[in-house]
Amino acid sequence: MPKTLFGKLTLFWIGLFLLITGLFFYYKYTNQAFTAADLFFRASPPLAAIGFLLSAAGLYEERGKNKLIPLVVLSISFVMLCQAGYHFIHMHTPPPRP
Image: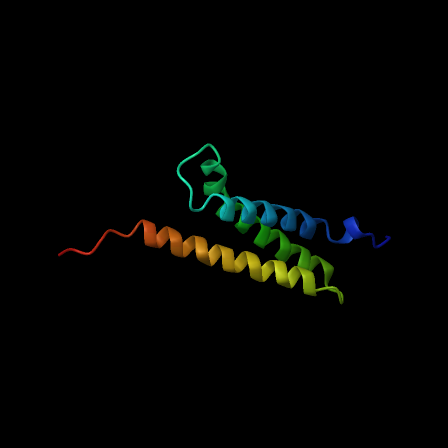
């Protein structure tokens, strides 16, 4: 079976595309008012999760020497998931009682 760029790391490239899409919408629409694109902002943490899982699957699928780019994508998506979790906890925690 030939080792092509899209044959061996297909899951990784799909995960990278979803992660870049999620990052784009996350940082583009974070500090704006509610617009139609806020739907994409709300969809970016699941996109990052899908990108995280798919790049992890692509990293496991590769098992060769070319592990640097999937590791970078994995760490970026992990940081973005942590940010989304912190934002969710911070926004949904009630204020302390006086």
